[in-house]
Figure 1 (spheres, rainbow, N blue to C red):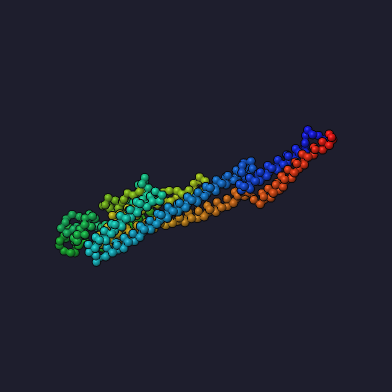
Figure 2 (cartoon, one colour):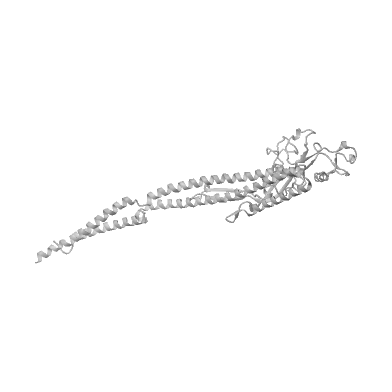
Amino acid sequence: MVVQHNLTAMNSNRMLGLTTKTQAKSTEKLSSGYKINRAADDAAGLSISEKMRKQIRGLTQASSNAQDGISAVQTAEGALNEVQDMLQRMNELAVKSANGTNSADDRQYIQDEIDQLTTEIDRVSETTKFNEAYLLKGDSTTTDKATFIQSGYAVAGDLYAEGSDTALTTAQLKEALEKGQKIYTDTSASGQTDDKIAKANKDYAYVTKLYDKDGKEVSAENVLAGKNADGTTDAQHYYTSDAGKTGNDNDANVAIAVADAKKTDGTGYLEQFDVNGKLSFNLHVGADSSSNNKIGVEISSMSAAGIGVKNLKVDTEYDATAAVDRISAAIQKVSTQRSALGAVQNRLEHTINNLDNVVENTTSAESQIRDTDMATEMVKYSNNNILAQAGQAMLAQSNQANQGVLSLLQ
């Protein structure tokens, strides 16, 4: 028996210390809910968990980004819905003005409403915004050209107005017709017999559309480029009816040189306005920097000039008739933009669904790595609690063992 070293008590104390440390870790895990509270708990598990947390938080924000994108798209599309309603009303007014039963005053009243609606379209374009970003007026840092076929008259050969011996330009022909002057095919016939009076279906034609040699309607963009309807560049003339170059004298089919049709200074058949370029922005819908995580949105300038109804005239029968085609093209342009925005919105809704699903599954995986299994840990805690109590009892008993030495000393 020795008294200098109580090895039994030392052993009991060491084991009690280990049990206490293990119990402290269990207490920490149970109270925090995490089984990894520091890198020492599981170095590899902590690294994996943090990578997953980065992805989860990034994807959660990406889902929010996509929802903001939907809100912006809905704002723009809602405004365009109102623009389209105004265009439908303008179409009604143009069709009404094209009717021959209207007086000049009637058409002026119609023109006044058309002007107000055009101004309102511009106002909607200028003021519609989301989070201080204007959505419908395009990008003011870039400039584009909006080109449209304008109404007018096409001359077949030289025509003369009553009392005039000078051949008329198309602009002069329009002015003479609006004044009610007779138009002649020969200057010597001016004021004489009627057999040389120009016929509208033969000697001149009112232009609302242009056609290529195959009778296919040519867009303003192709006219400007001197192309046929199919994009080929062998256009020599455009025609005022869909009869094309095969048309006969009974058709309102006047050939117009490409160079004349391309003019945009008011002497040709194109009208052109400066407009802002397309507004473009990207929605970041992923947790990483990959370009695949960008969804682009483009919105053209939806001003009156941008959609083709700027300076729209309906105060004469012919202008009102031409305006119907111009408004129809504007309605189609707005519909195309609305369809594009609707497609983006649908895509974003699927994107959000996918992001939320990935976040849920990744969170589940991260939970398996980092979260405490409370039932299992409670079993460990209870076991260590019992061991701690036993260790304390054994330590007390070990301290009593050396008391036997006293009996030897008595």
